[in-house]
Image 1 (cartoon, rainbow, N blue to C red):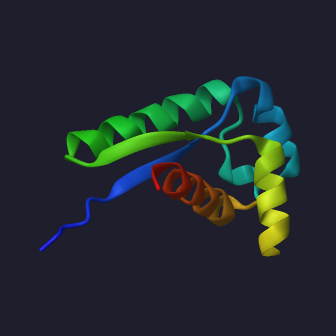
Image 2 (image 1 turned 90 degrees about the vertical axis):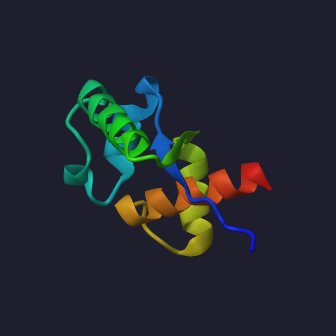
Length: 95
């Protein structure tokens, strides 16, 4: 039997796009106040997942592409949509 290995895809933002992300999301309170805080939290999450034996990869997110994707799906760029977009990109890149 072919066992499917789960790979966690973490949305990865660039520092120069952080403020734009905070301005366009419907749930800005779900994001850390600064890019540095967010990156620190994201790095901790990655270390924790990997220490539990999980595979994790960072998925670079361009805000303009995220917005286009959300529009095509008829969804707002909230935390759920951002996670789904990261998974979509990860799957697309690995196929």
